[in-house]
Image (cartoon, rainbow, N blue to C red; front, side, top):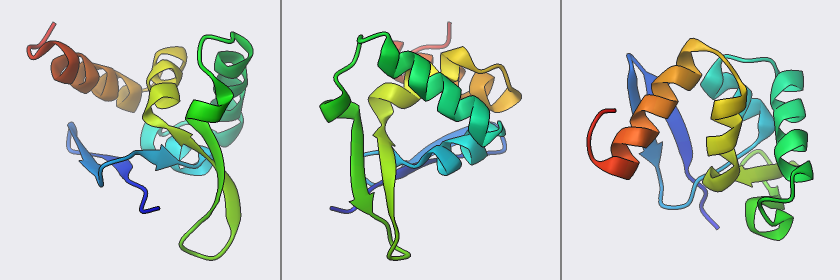
Length: 104
């Protein structure tokens, strides 16, 4: 399965590929946050039982040959609301625009 990732450059959010699946390290890089903070946010969202683990978390082989847990866009969105960085603000603004078709 080819996985897509999210990139934030110059206040612009772009998505590569059709299905977004990112590692905790990639999410931390996206939001300019620490990996422990991202892992804590992932744990909190998963513990809330709002999302099904089998839908938002997979263990897969990466391009470099290693295996890692990857997370879907459905869990990346609530993570963006749990962290407070400039990049999470940019991402939330982008997501609201994508969702509602206008800036809020």
